[in-house]
Image (cartoon, rainbow, N blue to C red; front, side, top):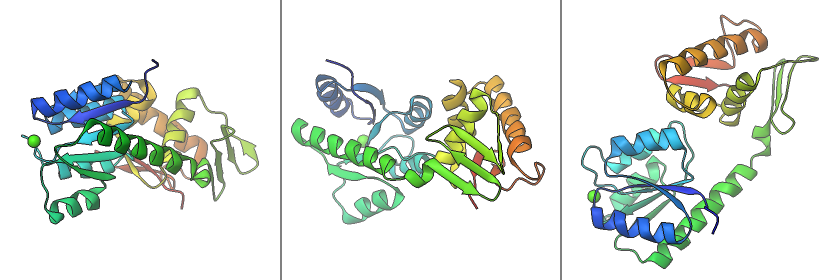
Length: 232
Ligand code: CA
């Protein structure tokens, strides 16, 4: 069987984690797991799993807070697995950005069905946004489908990492992406060296793409957090 998408489980209860892990592996998914929110968030940032199964009652942080933090940079489908049956808990989870809410205990068949649905929605959502593949704002034109960047009438020559970084930001236009997420995606780790590389690459991209690199209009810094591409 070929390995399908990887799924991250954040759940502190060993028996539930074990049950879910077994069900997912048998269905052909690769599984990452964590019993704390902190470790789970780290895994999500480093491995960009295709989907998250999230418990709400975690020892170090509430699950709803985990959703909020992830949603600052990621559209990963999130299925909440919770023992909490209150409407208010569900609403809080959905408002924070959860995609589905399942009350424990849950059977294997239903769990897998919900996962398939969430993954399918995520794929459709990605396909549904051709606009995000082509950004034209002022002098700058980025065509992700053809991997071409124009400034006015000139094609801009970019190195692979410059292009990868730009493409990541453009694909998530107007969303804040963290330093850690960007370095992990583009350079494969979040070491100090990669962070320096990130700062340098942003500076080069600004010189190549911005009318006024010292007062950037598109490649914006969120001090101490990360970067955002503004298509305005
Ligand atoms: Ca729990």
